[in-house]
Image (cartoon, rainbow over the protein chains, first blue to last red):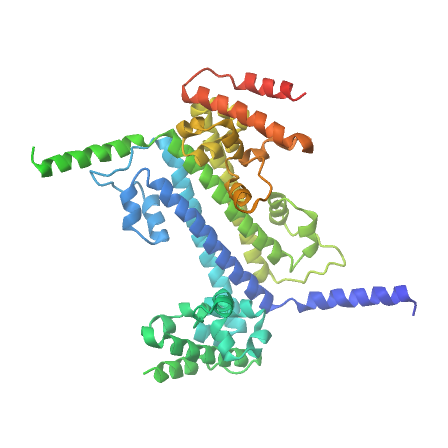
Amino acid sequence: MGFEKYYDLNLRETKKKIKESVGFNDFIVQAINNIDETNKAINLLAKRLREWYELYNPELSRKIIEHDKFIEEILAGNPKRDSDSMGAEISKEDYQPILELAGEIQALFIFKSRQEAYLDNLMKENCPNIREVAGSLIGARLVALAGDLKRLIMFPSSTVQLLGAEKALFRHMKTGAKSPKYGVIVQHPFVISAPKESKGKAARMLADKILLAAKVDYFKGEFIGERLNKELKEKFK
Amino acid sequence: MGFEKYYDLNLRETKKKIKESVGFNDFIVQAINNIDETNKAINLLAKRLREWYELYNPELSRKIIEHDKFIEEILAGNPKRDSDSMGAEISKEDYQPILELAGEIQALFIFKSRQEAYLDNLMKENCPNIREVAGSLIGARLVALAGDLKRLIMFPSSTVQLLGAEKALFRHMKTGAKSPKYGVIVQHPFVISAPKESKGKAARMLADKILLAAKVDYFKGEFIGERLNKELKEKFK
């Protein structure tokens, strides 16, 4: 076989392998990254909206902290201003673009929840145990941070516990600052609800169970997520 | 008059002054900041879309550099893939969220252009000369960077030339790096089209004219924007 023919064959094979390597791991990674970037976009624009709206009604922004509720209130019609509000009268012409911004952010919220439903479905099909123990958002973030499910199960549980805290970890190593106790799993209800002095312990236990769940998912084992959750709750009594 | 009564009166007066101080300057600042943040949101999400879409058709992303055209192409229907594409087949279910992301970004583009039209109107009404010389986007950015029109006209033209280059300026002062030649006006066609060796000179001349335009706008003078533009072009021959 001449070199050129060999080269062509090799190239074709490589392309085929790249093609075939696309799978649920990629979709999970894309979906969660998209949700996180959408969140960033929502926060950018919601901060804008608040500043802009404060010209008209500065008191409302302080009253309603959650962006989605703040936007709902505005879109539901001019919220009443306090009689001694510091806000200015604004012409209809100058109020319209504020309303449009609120509408745009609301559309992003709806978009995000649709994307979350898609991700939840992906996790249900491919990582049912991780989904049950970690929740689909945190679970997907762990898969994305590891690269894919296979790489996730290769980690020791102490690494799983810290995934997403890389910055704090490097700061710890470089400057001797306090070492981080948890990465993205800090947002898990199990860690949030743990008393302050045992948050580290809760994170360690949770990481253990997530890793176990991930291994079962990788090897297409049975659904043991509920049992893992029960064990987690009992251990913490 | 007792102290409490005096205090109440004072508070009422202050609130009234704050109310009355809201004006076109605020709307210009809010509108341009909103446009710039929308741009950031678009870029965040468009990068996401490209990465995601590359699973299916990696070749298209390299072919079409402009985000808006890339999105149009995708929304117009599955663009054909090369016969030897490295992209994978993707189920309808996994393609749908990609399409929705593309739709969301397109909505943001439309939103942005409506906001630009609003800003352009504001500038036409309140800063017609700045708008003619600097364009409404760059003009509004200068007003926003200065704080308002009044503060803008207090600056020497060398400052107007550098507005928006604060970071580079401080780097220059701290580390002795090259001093910046221009801030946001670098995006003006007059500077862009100037030959490389005279970009600095073009920026200086442009800043002069913008500052003159701003002064006329602040004092509600006549429309001299076209004359200023003509002088600018002639000087550079």
